[in-house]
Length: 167
Image 1 (cartoon, helix red, strand yellow):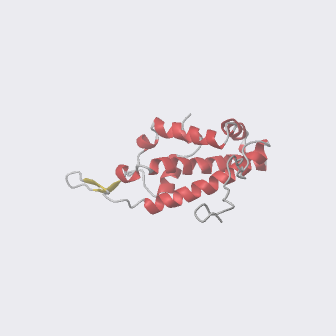
Image 2 (cartoon, one colour; image 1 turned 180 degrees about the vertical axis):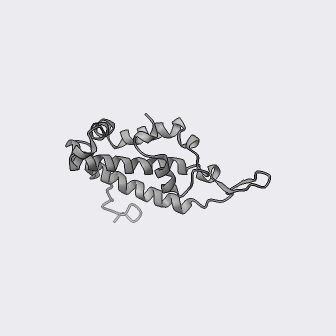
Image 3 (cartoon, helix red, strand yellow; image 1 turned 30 degrees about the vertical axis):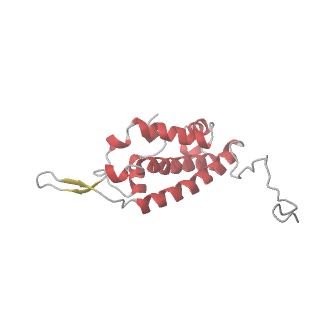
């Protein structure tokens, strides 16, 4: 499976605000990003890749609204899931300046991408929740977006008296 099954490389670059000169196809096509995306899709639901493939393989003009919503939500989620992974090393991958004179290239020494990554993380979270809702509509199964409350095993109890004064 290639990343382009789920999203376009230019879409990932657009989410990060970089060009193909700054972030090449060669870097984005590294297996680590593909593996990371598959893991992220399976974290949403192990049935998501199959549900996406089924909906995606239906001719676009004959897809139901729910199938189209699942394809769109999965593609959007994939863009931000990959952007989130690439963003970890964005400061050291993306050049600050590319010059022609003596083939100069300088990298960022600070972190100008902190704000970009904050926005990518916020969009990732929102798009993931939307994908979960769409998957439930499309398949009638999947994880619920509601948080489950863990069972309380231990509780806190206060003493009925003061051990120092004995009262």
